[in-house]
Length: 173
Image (cartoon, rainbow, N blue to C red; front, side, top):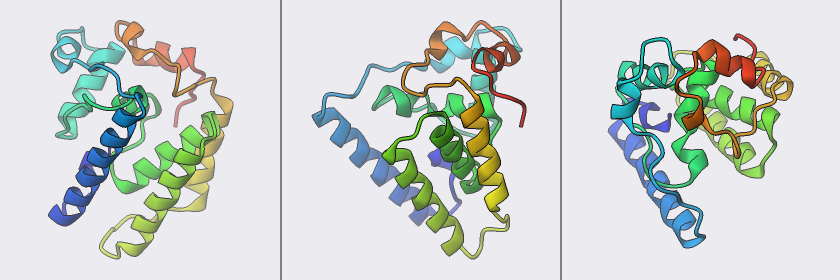
């Protein structure tokens, strides 16, 4: 989730401005949808279910669900849960690589390139991103049958994470 990219208030502010701009743009285009992720509903699900795992993921990362914008934006955190990628810049780059493999879009390519630029220009970031990691994430997406534009996790929240990963052929990381 882009909300936890960095501890820098300036970077967090820029990311939030970008997300707000994206919401305004998609609103004008008529692409925004009603809130999908209801955190209270997810928390009430049994431990081990995909929905509860999603809620626990948000809680563990001190995140709030995306509740505005397009369906794809609101379901972004579910891709992290499905793939196991972190919410740091490297995990975000891996999510974008996975999504490119699953369904190539120019938007994902642009997001991925922007993330790479941020990672490589932020000298304070301690982890190293390798092309092998990105290639592995891309291949996971290619091997899956996951479509980020049509999946309906709200119909799968009662299933276990393992079962949902199996439905989309998302192999373990």
